[in-house]
Image (cartoon, rainbow, N blue to C red; front, side):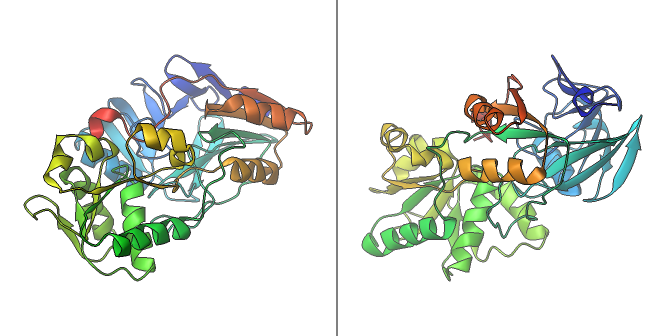
Length: 336
């Protein structure tokens, strides 16, 4: 069995015929393996879902306990036999519960990365490098212009702004799952021990992180707390500029995202304090990871696939894009 024959692209999404399952399918399917709980990868309505414990819990929080007819927990490193292949999940370092999927058949190993990052994150298990023949990599920031800043340095910028403008609330846009909780943890690592205030949309998932034993310190609801001058308020990205934000007098508007590397995008969004903090691998990390897997076949999904494909073809790797629609931003607009 050749590695390239493990996977095929169907209207429902990425399909493994040898195991008769889909990975992060866009439509309802009989059996789905889910890499992580972001809405562009995890959807409700499948007959059976296999994923890590945290991914299944996040799906239940977002979609309700009946998000699938059957859900099966797969621990990191646990190997399952599905059809003619062996499957195991391994940390992707993207968000809590995120996983790469290793598919093993006779003489061939394929890894589907899902979304991943190599930078340390106190809120999730670190990325695990897996040697493989075929690597399916994301390319959200797959252009050389995207070289993420050190997250700790970006947090220093936020704290410096607080010292400079103690009379102004700091509204920080952050995706509801993963980014918001990581920002709180990074602030605590820097010694920030004041309360962090949350928009209501962030409360449920942040509470789950706390229940999972992730130390986030003093977290409070922003609702009814006044104008919060000199405080940090986390909210979904869209809330930074909507009616909700008008209750704050002259706030410093901020957004934590890899997209803030593009300053024009920050200006167009009215962001005063862009923070280049991403939960995806940047160009250098993508290239390093692909090389370190030792793969001879590279398939590049959602994002800027062409640059990575060109780069690795020049290095002698058989590379091609997978044109998969329906993936992109970590959070759908309606969820933020």
